[in-house]
Image 1 (tube, one colour):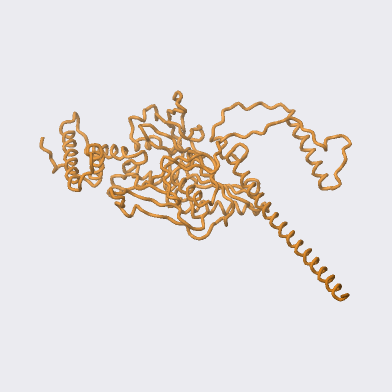
Image 2: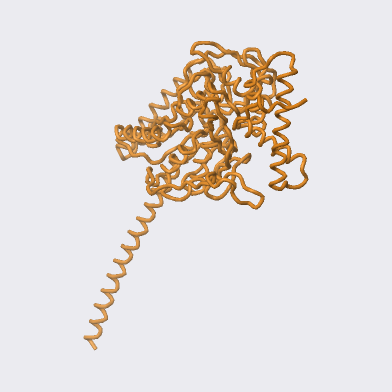
Length: 511
């Protein structure tokens, strides 16, 4: 059959699709790299093959098919075959991808990757329909509204999960390789507030970054400002900061750079490197960039703890890696997700035919490390756990004994009396019967609870801040005491020397 090229319009998107197919074909068929001439010949051969298949479908398929549907189907298959983070979207879905970056969209409140025809939940956003039904990171979604996701493309999945606020969607979920279960969610307008802050124990500033969108850096500045103002109202001084990046799926690289710059006083933050040729030279110099911090640490060198876990990914790992490699912060928690590649959203024909989300480069931490598939190992490994106070029963102290001798210092005695009263209240409380709470507790229930005692990783971080302050104060006091001792010793030696000189003069006069 003769190919009717005149009826075929090869757009730039089609050429890109065939070029990628050509590379894949060359990698599997060729035993050695092709010469530029051979590559060009093979490209035309593959384009001819594509044109023949398209013409066969249009003329011989059992029913008439729109050419655009065929081309979009080819694009979806090609881009999704590259890696789990690259995909093609039509013009409607493309606008939704852009809205994600702006921080407001409709849906259920999860971030996911589509791999092996399965939706893998990366993170669940706080205060969203997904968090209310206790979806978890690493859950597998295998069905949407009783339709298998194996028959769907990524753009179709996005459409299916998003919808009018108040409408319902049923997800089929597999957790820990157990039997699938259905859960019904009510869609809502998702506003991704990037940062939150609070003051813990009146001296530890807690900063949480949920994602990296266009509002993140300004939100972080506001959060720092607010927590400092709140500390002033408490007439206390902030002794350290905790930056919580747990379950943060990442987002915009430029926002990650600005956030890292907030805490650094200089040096490289991250570098990105695009494709290399056979000689190790860059194919496109624009994809090789290095980002550095400017002068000035917003926290003035105050102690900083970064909390991470398996849901800390991409841009969140850029911040973690920069602060870790520069020894600016102590990283605590679990090994991060391990997404060390950067995607760019590229419109096709100015967005008329949607666009593609394409992996364009890898990123490297200041130490030159790629964390792709490896993640960042924390300085202190701490598994998440729920902390509960163990009741040992009534404890007896010296102040509880009959006719015990009082302390000679009135302030200390008042303190002892208060502690005695507190112990009595605790004992009375423990005698009252309370119903045991046997309801299941998921990580999302206590991860960011106001009571830090139910968040073990956060509790450990606060303890670490307090320990660092204690050691700093202890060292300063030790230095001051040693300086005072040296000064006293020096004065003592001066007096001894003066007395010795006086005695020597007296002996000399007698002679």
